[in-house]
Amino acid sequence: MKAVQYRRIGAAPEVVEVPEPEPGPGQVLLKVTAAGVCHSDIAVMGWPRVPFPLPLTLGHEGAGTVAALGDGVTGLAVGEPVAVYGPWGCGTCARCARGEENYCQRAAALGIHPPGLGAPGAIAEYLLVDDPRHLVSLGDLDPVTSVPLTDAGLTPYHAIKRALPVLVPGSAAVVIGTGGLGHVAIQLLRALSPARVIALDVTEDKLELARNVGAHQTVRSDAGAAATVRELTGGLGAQAVFDFVGAPPTVALATAVAGVEAEVALVGIGGGVAKFGFGGIAYDAAVRVPYWGSRAELIEVLDLARAGAIDVRVETYGIDDAPTAYERLHAGRVNGRAVILPGG
Image 1 (cartoon, one colour):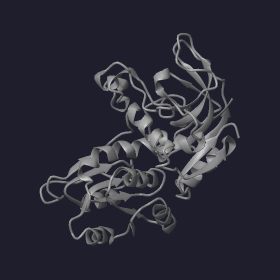
Image 2 (cartoon, one colour):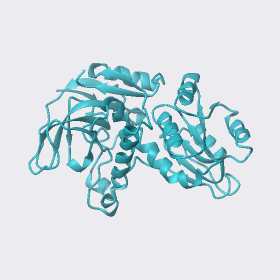
Image 3 (cartoon, rainbow, N blue to C red):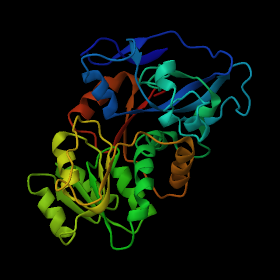
Image 4 (cartoon, rainbow, N blue to C red):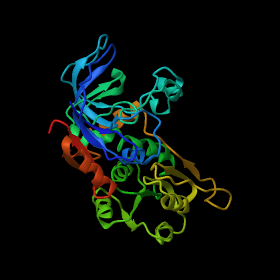
């Protein structure tokens, strides 16, 4: 079968032929219908060292139909459309028992990795899933527009849920970076809260996307952005800030625009580190570094999509064009989310 792999440190991803996997006891084989391309993949491919063996089949956003069931698997039918819950855990620790496998307490020690981030990923014709609990029914949802929700929807949803208590009427929420995750976050904020949404990015096309999906106001993310946001919020700052870039300038911006008792979520993995202390950030502001989300939250996100509350903007590519999708993403030319269709 065809698969898109990261094969050597510093090299571009390649389309290669690999053996088709077979499900063992308790496993599920999916025929992949759609797989998402993410900035996290580019970050991994930029590391001088990776904490897992290469070559690695990429893709931690996956959707497909059940192709085969390993011995002992029940509750699924061949041909059933499903989405993959990506942050795999041990399934038995206290966090996993609550469905919070994104915060599994034993995954690192046991060598458990998400698909595409250590385990073979979804940008392939078939994907082997370790356990049926990591699959969620798609029902009648379009897998192409739904597959980004397994990360680009779930991750901002998890971050926003933590901040909902402060997003009261009259509050403001700032979204920094309005690409793959950010444009979904804007829609989630509009669906879940009464807050005024202020979106920031560096290009006009991304700001236009932000306006199209519901941002009340947009601001060019430049040297004057913090002052502009402060002015828009009457000098008070925002009650919640979500940084989907995570680079040093955006992290500094996120803490600069936070108001008293604000929730600041640093979601992007651009290498920035927040500097805060007495006098360096608004009183009682909390800075968090969320990671992905729970299985229950993925179900909630898919239900929001089913209700028409969120709509992911996607660009689609065949599997042979996956390296081009990564090039476009790295250059900032993907408006929304890139999705690979292994079946054409």
